[in-house]
Image 1 (cartoon, rainbow, N blue to C red):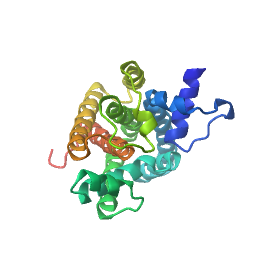
Image 2: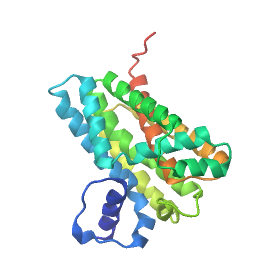
Image 3: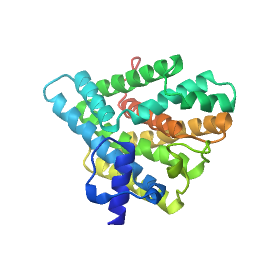
Length: 259
């Protein structure tokens, strides 16, 4: 029952989805909720895949991709997109650690953030639209939990860069066993997708490699620029790795323009 409570707390923290009233809330639970961040991704991925599948029965693939993306943005309240935009503004406009953190804390979106989120959405939508429907559904079901595991890896391995912040409770206590739970969630999801033929082994391996390469690259940048990570950084990792997973799946299909 306590594990179920922690899952619902993660759902409440990372999405707009309602949770049962009996769950309650204690601040201490936030310290352990990040183990279920990828499981929240399974829920969001299921919403995305369901909307895509429903849309694809009536509309062409590009429209289904847009509807799917809108559904995930609505479900999460653009939580991760906002973090990505703030990170683009901070890293693009700040020269010192203090200035980067100051810009990232500002709720206003600047030029770097607007350009960054526009390019990110364009990359995701274009890639999903180019995928065959079955592959797009598989990619959605893999990308959402896997990208959230990549973000969780920063909580596990890096220091929080601020003295306080919305993600601070999640940053204080993520043990290796808790990260193992998060990893197991993604492993099961990937195995099921492979078993039912939604994605082949090449697509899954390529997704894993590119996802964690992108997360590693961003983690190094965060360490160098601000000495750790913030909640916005987690959103940036989730968004970038989600996009590269879609690209990885598409790349394994051999549909290059010059191929």
